[in-house]
Image (cartoon, rainbow, N blue to C red; front, side, top):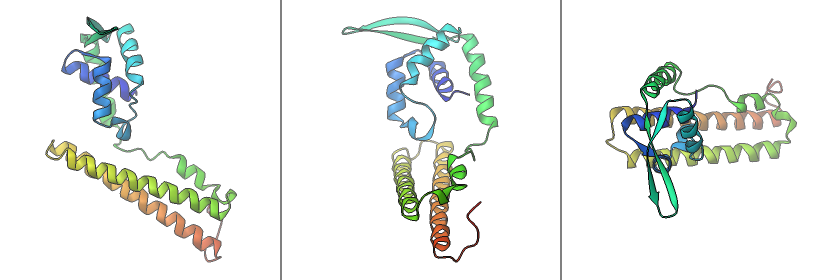
Length: 185
């Protein structure tokens, strides 16, 4: 499923919009942090949705030298949006798929200093994400109980990721000092 399609159709369902406006909403909501939506994919999605009959050009606005197309959702687009909503809501909120788990199979190919450096960087990135989510939650306080639940869930996942990274670092330290058995596979 394309998160961008879901977002664009959902926003067009609220009312006609142009691509720049949708991109501004993506940026303002920091959607790239918590969805697979990339601002640059909005225009491509609008073009495809129009070609598929799920959106249509409602108007064209001139702003300076630019011509902006205002898009609206079609009835077929509303049906497609409902299908996408059902599919998205039927899946788990967070995926357990991870390249990290796969990489752990061969962690011993890195020297201990390299592994420690990479894990420290990963832990730092998780802590930055935790801080960003905390700030976002504060900024969006009172939005809705659903938004609160989503923030709490994301924060819990980030806390679990931080703990996993610390546990992997402890394991590698014990392995290096000869107190753990096996190579991690």
